[in-house]
Amino acid sequence: VFLVFPCYYLLSSFFFFSFSFVFFFFFFKQKTAYEIYQCDWSSDVCSSDLAAEGEVFEKTIKKVLYPVIEGMNKKGIPFKGVLYAGIMVVEKEPFVLEFNVRFGDPETQAVLPRMKSDLVEVMIAALENRLDCFKIEWHETSCVTVVLASGGYPGSYEKGKRIFGLNRVKDLEDVIVFHAGTEKVSQDAEEFYVTAGGRVLNVTALGKIGRA
Image 1 (cartoon, rainbow, N blue to C red):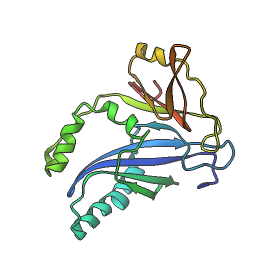
Image 2 (cartoon, rainbow, N blue to C red):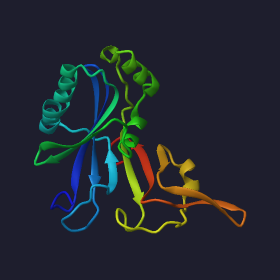
Image 3 (cartoon, rainbow, N blue to C red):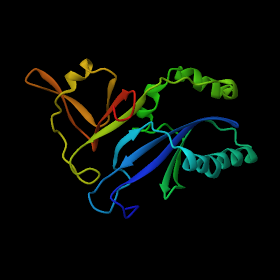
Image 4 (cartoon, helix red, strand yellow):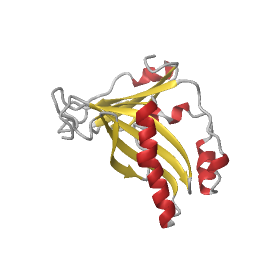
């Protein structure tokens, strides 16, 4: 239990790093595990690309991300890659929970679908120390990822529940379904998916605005 609130927002960010040249990506991840006054760290339910704005954005850049870059430079650490920061926002103040040297999911799944630029080219630019002259282009859309989780998650939950409706995804425009905790099984000459984890499917959708 981290907060005495029904839910909280975790401002997450990840950035490509090559010496002191950085691209920042921000989005909000809503986590709700319980109905009353407590939340669990692992209860991801939704991510969106809605960027932090104004005061929170500036504070996060100034108090967290720039000091990390400056600290690495002072220590002569030649880090190149992706650094993922999990930051709790409480009353408009950012607090660091963790840093990971990876992309996050479902966080990344609500950001990369909007990227027009080639992700491989961005990574190569980081490796070659030329992020300062690389511009990432984005589609003018919003993106939201909703996690379908097993009943009981993040506590104990059942497995082996059949999943219906996946065959209809191909007919939906701007919708991507990522398998997180599923298993493909065969029964009576029929193949289908069943639940095999706490977070089962991450459903990502694009639209002109977040509500769409």
